[in-house]
Image (tube, rainbow over all chains, first blue to last red; front, top):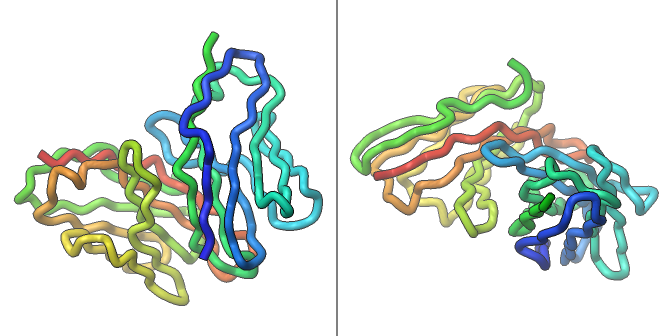
Length: 114
Length: 114
């Protein structure tokens, strides 16, 4: 079984500042990692994913994440946020090799202030 | 219509009513999911249907009953619900059996039980 911990329930930041949303996972097997974003009154949308290869993954809207196997982390970063990035962000993990049932973290609310 | 659609988007029902939520995916996927998203709680996987199996979260009460007549449609039948069942119900789909298990979500049905 695997688990996901998003260490911050809420992250306030000013517009144009950098941001990092933290995600740590626990698993006894190899995993795939995902970040999803949920804007108000909408479903979740995939931001980026790590399957294999380069540990630095680039996603949509200028976001990127780095897979760190030794620290079992997959932190999400953006160098300069916009008001429109205000949303809920979810980290998720699935067992690699064909599993299709993910485990989600509790979510981090990113609040961008002008 | 493209992606994953859900109807209705909003539903208010009494505890003695019977209603159904509908989900349709236009992506050619073969796995569909129901999630419950309550305020301040983690995303809760309720049911999964795929070509290989049906998975149920054993903690989901029997007043929720899923139906998956084909790979494109998924229903959640509701009866004698409780106020604590008020939540956002999200449908998702993915392509099971592949290494890439990202999910595509619908916009959700906001359910209020009076």
